[in-house]
Length: 380
Image 1 (cartoon, helix red, strand yellow):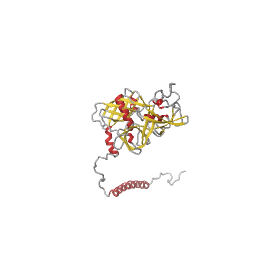
Image 2 (cartoon, rainbow, N blue to C red):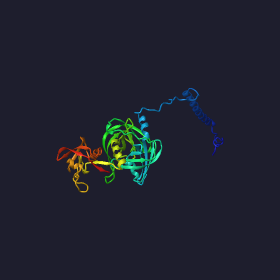
Image 3 (cartoon, helix red, strand yellow):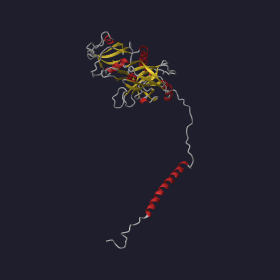
Image 4 (tube, helix red, strand yellow):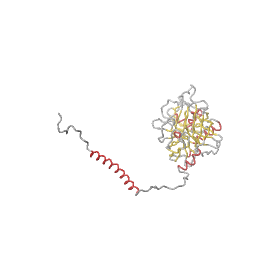
């Protein structure tokens, strides 16, 4: 039963005091924020005035020729980006102008996706484009020459001498990593005469053997075929391969990035091969005409017992036979430099020219001896 004083049955009126207090607090926060912002602005700027920041004035854009900027300015006009497409796929790489006739040097694996009938588009540093045709290519050296026609104002890059290069020399790499044309990176020569094998098919063909220059200048996919230049903007190498974290080494066919282990074909090799490709359409390889035992796991390169077809492992009348090499011999040194595997022997031989004479240290029946071999010649 309800009480008769009416207090329980009548609805209570909500106090507006609390709402007003909340409103006052909200108003106070808003106005406090505005006031604080104005106060902070005045405190920072010393009054309500326009702000004008100091800045350096115009300066000369010229740089010292031996600086990275100076080297880049000199070399960039002679560097091109190649876009290749064909039945075997598509790809992007780099090349550089060799002469005023339009010859451009690059890697064989850059033009390989185009096959024999693919399209090659060349983009110069200024943005001009032209179509190119393959003049010659060599998988063993991983080099190719293409040519553009009716292009004026070509800027050939001067060629240096890779025999003059020393570990620690500064270098600049130019290319189109991940299709970013005109990218410039710098570093040093980290090592010389690195025996590198790259590429190759399941049957063992199309393997390139390079006695490479190693550099820590960042090189990434798309830098292939681009120039590695010295402090005088002369080409000393052709950027060709990288080792990336987790890829086990090899060529730059994967998409992993640089970890500071890049490899370039020495320009002395590049020059010789380029001249042969231009003049003859093919390159020659120095050989000793012996078959190596690919299953040998010891130190050095062992001559096999038989050739692949069952014939003699040392070709009769060939350079190796004339030098006195026999089946079972283990080659341990080339011109006094130690080798540890058959690939290293091939790399050392490929670094020379047909007709060059090499001193091979071999082990036979537990005894060491030195043989002199004159390199023969084989086409690709």
